[in-house]
Image (cartoon, rainbow, N blue to C red; front, side, top):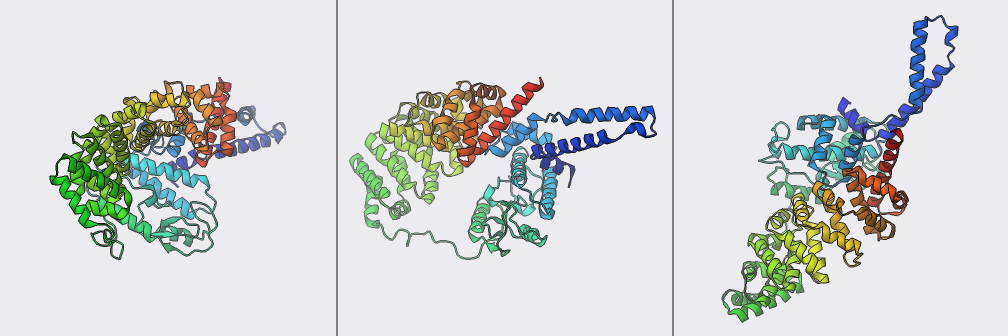
Length: 545
């Protein structure tokens, strides 16, 4: 085990290790107390030194060593936050001296060997260390995009190294899986890694620590296919899965739609007068809503570019039909890319800004549907959608507010859009929903706040609205999901500024956190336990002053 692997491993087990040191200290102090030094032939100088050592052990026995609170908080943030702030990752990288991909690879390999050779139950430390290594890996790839060819398999990179999805990584090696297999607990591992684990005599699942009912390894063909598709789309090389792909051409997929009728409607879209175009767009809107076959057939017939053109129609009703037809067609994943490639995003945003209320609502829903594809989140945010969505969130109908909130939530998963939303003033209307306890929008408001609180600007903006009392009240009285999101927001705020933690303590939040740690959702329990630990540290720090 390397020194840094030891540090990283034990940093996530501070309480357990601290307790062990305290126990050993007590044992040594007790042993020293039982020795009759006066009966030994020792010089005064030696007796003096022994006395000093004994005093030091007596002091240490009654005092828990003060820990590096910043390091602990950084580790907690990296473990819990889906997208930790780059400042935190940089600080943790420096604290652990993991500054390059070479450093990280060395520690990852050492950790890998610990897992394979360990005869003990690694428990939660396995999951925690895996999370830390993965997020540091993603961070280092971000700050060093031109990765040295020795850091990554030369056949696995073209220009930039994409971030590997968590589900595609082996939980043991943390690397992209090439031959994923399933063990009896249902967990998936890279075949070579789990085989090495089994060959070492282990009878448990490394990730869950459950006893394996058998040691048979079942190929995970579905995951292997997904990994292969991901590699192809990112220019990476990986052995292709055998077998023919699904035929998506016209034929079986569109066999149940009326091609002749759709063809006639397209002619009207292309060459008809304003009334004919309006009527044709309305018909396609209804056909696209009716079933999946129609959605495929309409797209394959070439309707999408024509509908995109109608988004700029001066006739409001035609515009409504066009954007709603695109919304219905976007339910099909293949159609999403066709819509985007037809240049629809900017036109849909314009409808969102300037259309009728119905058109604006359906434009918001369309943007949400398109934003399911991660690359589209970036393009939609860059097109200026977020300020328009916030305006709909404030001034829209109840349905419009829901559509706007759903789109904002999904777009804000991308870090750049978090910043756009905060700078466009998203926090004030969200907090107004909470403070006025608008029953129709509390769920959505909390969900969005929980997402943007993960960004430094989001923390600051939320913190300026004095949210802690309202969030604590929601933890006490809200639905399970609202309690979870309220705890997540408080946790993010407290990790960023200890004053929020002290305020929560003054408001007697400890009991609410304790109850949530026992009866909340799994995520809520984790946040509540972490907040309780932070409260204890604040109390200890105050006691030592």
